[in-house]
Image: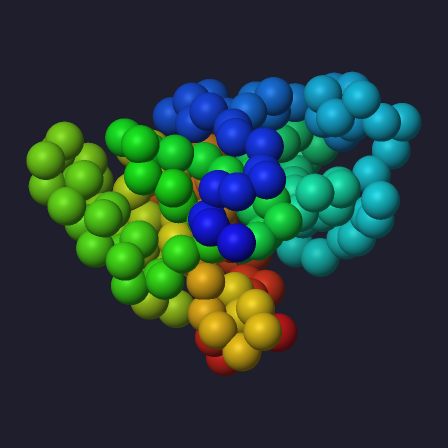
Length: 164
């Protein structure tokens, strides 16, 4: 399967959200955007977390949407300048993001676990193991979370090498 085959495509809205989701939405508004009454799964941790069908996890800060994580294979595909961010070799996406940032003047940041972020776009590159192969897994975060050391160090770590 290619990185985009058979997947819904979501538009990246830097600083505002992704696809039908907007940062600052309540859990009820997020469920409404997915046209469901509630998520498939709800968890606590440093922040509230909900899982929806089709590989979408959302995270809340004080009851407001702050982070959207997409599964590398089953989540919606997001394109940046026509380049698919999910389901590729992580090194390929990493290089694309570096080149994109150099061309467009985006701010780069490496998190403590070595993940690359373009803070002004709210894009954080994670990876996920799928069938013994690591694939790119984009996470979209409101900008102030990436700029805050407190939040940045507590971003979703599932799927990061060395974290469970």
